[in-house]
Length: 426
Image 1 (cartoon, rainbow, N blue to C red):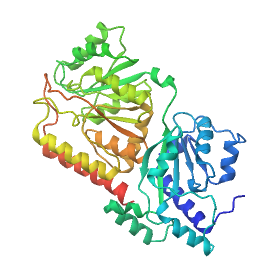
Image 2: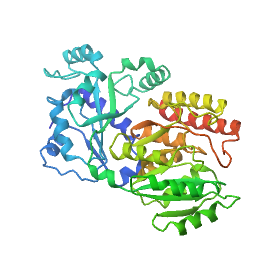
Image 3: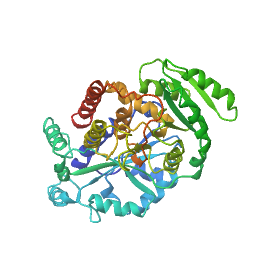
Image 4: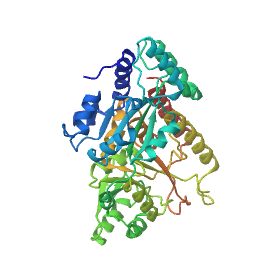
């Protein structure tokens, strides 16, 4: 039985409380989470005395990485045991606090380990460069390593409002995932989710352009109570293109995100891609999204229209600066750099819609477009988000649905406020 010090026990209890909040209920229900509490648990797994279910999607390692004699060897061994989709949550003590732990060992509150290693974020990255793991996402860590009623919460709030103080945190917590994954993920089908509201003039082009895609796919059109011939033309395209898998889903007319979710309920693809029917993005650019997610570069591939310069007339000036404002706000809340929050094109594993739905329900989010909720949920549950630069073109046919600027602005601010409370205050 591993002999743990007082501070170690208190930190591990606190660490498990923190990480438990970041585990979605579906993963708990399906027994997809493995918690390694001590070196006895770890040795049983590493030495194959205890089989790890391939269904495991998240491993929580409560042992601070500082206590490993050979950290690179640990990552090498555990890589062979875990599936390509499994993430690891780890923690380590900051090198800044090494004198504190040496002092605590003198008075018996911690154990002194001769070979103990302390990390900065850069030193930790050096270790990871020799492994097949990369940092997926850092969690906002508490300043103190134990939960002292009121005091720990107070310092946590202070550092969340003043992020530059985070360097004083005793501990760091982050998600890790594999850098390189099996090539089998590059042959899985994607469901292209296309919400439509009065887009009769764009349907035929979308189907035609889909022939340029270089991966297995299905097209799922959601007619969200159109007043024109959108549904009729989709049915005609289904009959005209028997070689292409096309589905028509009737939406409730309750907005884009509701329509997207209705489409995903009918999705059979391993991945889901949201593609706006206004065709301001070239359909063939979805090849870039597929490549990025199927090679494991990220778990949410977020299109960014603001890295390249948008084409003339593609985006109104007020919308452009509004996008920049929300990009900074969302990045501040999540600690994930996002350059465009409102691009309609996103790609993720279809099963992750359950995480998005849970975040929306638990935090009473009413995001009409869905972009913010997807970004917030991905960050909260440790999914790696990356921006993919795309060219943004002017809409040629139909009318924009982003025409109630003040109403939508209030809705977006409200969503951000609720996410702020979840990330920074709870």
